[in-house]
Image (cartoon, rainbow, N blue to C red):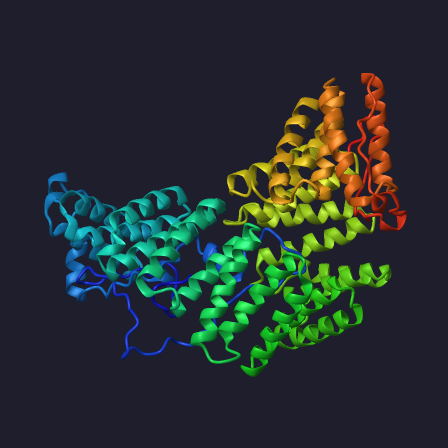
Length: 618
């Protein structure tokens, strides 16, 4: 987690409070030591964007937002052993009037610190921290607001460690309200730390929208305190960029990542590890936006920087990303070479049965499937599954579940939905109780919904889609194109179950989302228009259906030309509706260019299903 101070790695729940009650924030100064050249992890680019946390954010969330260890509101060591022993003899149930003693708050804060340091357990430390905050609120005054914030930070970190995230949020909201970043660097550090920890806690609870808002506020405070060009600001910018990637907000992520690159180019030596991490994140963003050439450029530059710093394992990870980009560009031989090079390094450094090795095997399986070598593809999938079945100790469930999801997608493409569904169920079981994995679980449930739909289990499909939609709503991802597509799929499942009114509501919401995110002429948006028109037709709302179909036909003719099969389909449906309504189509003159478009410009779709009666499209 980024901080106003570039701290070393520290264990979770290590929250110290200075004896003088003031946190120390180092500001830029001529006599200050240069910042430590510590490598900040960055996510390894994936071949497709997925609703999973990237590396540095994932580690913070896995710790249950006890990231105060990285943002250290550092307090000095507890006092002498004799003093700590005397403090422990304090009665647990003090009279409420004792809280009015102005010296009691700092006293209890030291007790909480001592309880954490001595390993007495979180319950005792939490009790002291809560009582300290109550005392400081009652009689601390303005001069004790910083100590109040610290006691609330301690309580929040303990709550997070215990999985009591709502109570942690409440404590952190009180903590940031107690600080005033204009009152000096100590208050600025406390406010920054509070907002970043609050963002982590929201992320653990799956509330990405609130999480990003808190990170943005922390960044704003940090820039005011340190200046926009400080290297520590770059660290926070990258952290916030990763959060935007998690929420699939790639334009915002790109702006922040470019700022991070600019700061590191100014303050770091050429080909630094910081620049390599920035470029790997930028490559992930570019690939998610479909700019594969730019992604490849960033990955090659990142690889050169890592080679210069002797980071062989990280170079292999970048080689995997380069292979993914070559695959997206249909440069298959170069992709195979990159994957095989990475596979050799991973096997020699991590062992043959490490999930990282399995991840490369899955990519090779995908490559061979796309080149029509189905036997080789199936063999690589089976080899990867053998590794996932017996992973080495210390393997992360997130890595195993992610690999199973990718293999399931390959099996689905091979026409084996039952096998794909079994793998998705295993992946879901691995992640369903993991903190901070709501978006990933929603992705798995959405994929399961598609599988259920393919095999005709429409009720199960609707249930899976409904659960995925609920998670995305709760996590603040209601504005993504993925959310709009998911609403459309759920609507199709409702149509199969004859829940027409529910389907119409879902198609209407999907239309609003996709118009905002993709535009009115995007194929996904046009598909929703067609489905909504078919639904209105089934409900007897013929005039509304005609209006929508006329608009769809106009857009398709402008984009595809009049000879395209999709245009013919829409034209036939519109003609039938117009006959029922006793009307004729209001045609406008078409340009010669559109009239002469040939079938060679047909858009290839991955999945297309039509229902002759209603004309629904997936």
